Length: 402
Ligand SMILES: NC(=O)c1ccc[n+]([C@@H]2O[C@H](COP(=O)([O-])OP(=O)(O)OC[C@H]3O[C@@H](n4cnc5c(N)ncnc54)[C@H](O)[C@@H]3O)[C@@H](O)[C@H]2O)c1
Image (cartoon, rainbow, N blue to C red):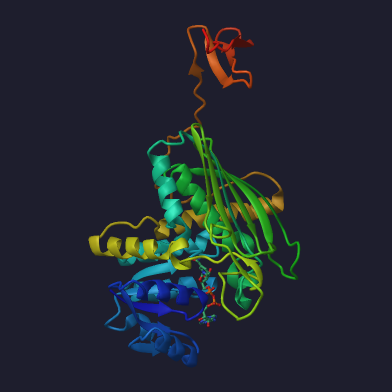
């Protein structure tokens, strides 16, 4: 498919690198940048056939079938409007909107126009993430009880991110959108998110928005999704996820210290990895950043979905749900209370309730816990089904000589 790239900055280059690597059949045909010199440079770097400083010209170009929005957050809606007008399929980077109201309008625009709306949440396509979700769906870790997703780094690279009006917020909107969607996938996207408790502060930078936040999202299944986001972290980009289930645990480290370590005295000026702050001493490069961040898997899903007329794993609807959760996080950070998530559109399950099933040990007792002690004895902790009394039973280790 032939693509129009809107924007020629940081993420546009990441997307173009992924699309033009590995002999893919979908390629960027034209690029729009408000500065024609930047458009020309981008077009030359990726050998594009066309470039322009007119956004509508790029979208309406007769060769263009799909539009990739790689513009600052405050321009996503305007770009989606133009895609709907010219009936071009659209893939939008994260966050979909600055607010749920904005995201909802974008969702309605693509649905009314009958065009495809893909939400480019790359971190839900990393190799480790996809395998983790598959293990969870197969039941390997039982019922999901708690998920934790962290994205922290020393702060973004362009002026507009730091301007609350243009970005819609600080670390919560920029990084929380990733973490919230990661947790939704682990917990199950049909499970309704109910309420949010969030702490946020501006600890370091002279800005209006928050540069650090921690939040808890409560789901209808009883699961808790925790997000930890910061623009104050020093030492690179930390992308880690954890899932605790009734039968197991998953820990994923996507980026920092993932098994590739290099020492340099600082000679040379080589790029190490995204948001790395230094290039001397012990360094932690990333082999194939694009792949580790999920871009190739994401594009494969998006273009396959367009071709076969199905929904992608991450759609505009998902982007809208994420924005609704983040809206509640902003309200909670101010009120210091649990705040309900306002979902005018909910397409998931309405009947899920928190489960607390007890494991029966025998006719009289529930099993609380069993454990082998250091001396080899087995200990059982049991609860009487009628009286609620908690007792323990110890069976001595059977001697190996017996
Ligand atoms: N992992 C990810 O998925 C990821 C990572 C980084 C950024 N992003 C998202 O990508 C989008 C762009 O971020 P970026 O990091 O590429 O930013 P950037 O500043 O590097 O690039 C933004 C592009 O938009 C252009 N631009 C800025 N203001 C404009 C205006 N008023 N009119 C027209 N063009 C304008 C810039 O010239 C540049 O080409 C944001 O929504 C951001 O959240 C996603």
